[in-house]
Image (cartoon, rainbow, N blue to C red; front, side, top):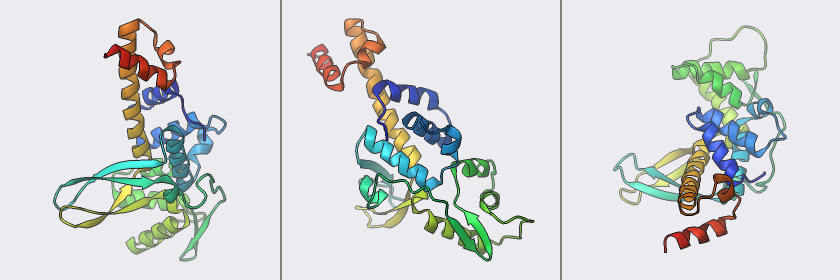
Length: 237
């Protein structure tokens, strides 16, 4: 996984600002993996996509994922850390790209991709979205059967088992009221929040040094992070 430069992060943030999270995730991977086409990335299983996004976070920031959540019971805000290696498993550098076929009630399914989620997202009703996703992933031909809610749950659970990184749940315990709950980690949203924080810092550095020395953005970004920090420290002393 290629780490993005300061200018690369700025360009990524600028082009992805305001896009749907699905598009933001694919845009980030396109920037980090220029040798892979955008169409191919859109057809990656969600677990493979999330694995690559976590590896991108490790390359650009750190293997420590710092997050926060709000207790559903008492409203207390809490911070927590996640270890990327623990999320990725024993071999954090590997991507499993083999096709997985799921069998449920005599029907065959593949695991969902970003392209599938984009199609399902167009349905306002949650059940309609689930049906759309199920039918897009069904490998058997013929007319769609009448899927019950139990069927939808069973297929969804089978997909989650077959592609564990597609959705990551974190068990949290509130230090205030001791309430426990599962929090879903949105890998794309988390990475994009980190990018936003870094970009705001970069823009402040550019503004500070340009105002003090008259340097261009290109000249400032060509400096190493250590040199930029040293110059900024001199500006404020």
